[in-house]
Length: 225
Image (cartoon, rainbow, N blue to C red; front, side):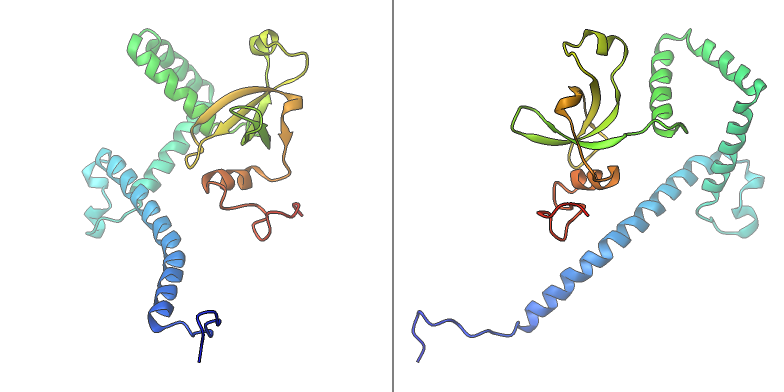
């Protein structure tokens, strides 16, 4: 006879428990694939809906194929963008852009909108070597609390001159979770910034996952290999 203090013998999981485990495993496998396909399909459809109405009716692919082929608008957009970029690199293209921007500069509201969008586009899409240099640890928003940051550049100009520090000043972007595209630009003395060995991509995963995904996720207590 078993007493209340006896250990309960190991029981084999029931049918419902096994089905639930299989279902959750299936969700983990299917969800990333389905969301990726859905996102790509939606973006392609959005680009098609924006580009195809600008194409003359006689050049519409459905006029020849009989069905609406998704992705044709993306191909047209890519070809058009490459052609515009090729023209913009030439002397004539640069002259036209300079003239158009001088006209836009005379329009009060349009000027502000255009300059803001241009700055964002140049920052995100320009083919330059400007990017985050290293992931780092900083004490923010106060000492004793640590945050992941990304070192962008060394502070220069008026910011560096007016800051009350004797050493080098680093520009650090501190992203928010789970959206790392928003955050805070902070300036730290170089001695207060701890550079990490993990890559920018691994640090971004750590931020997006709210600390659930580590570069050495098999054993986060062990040093990086």
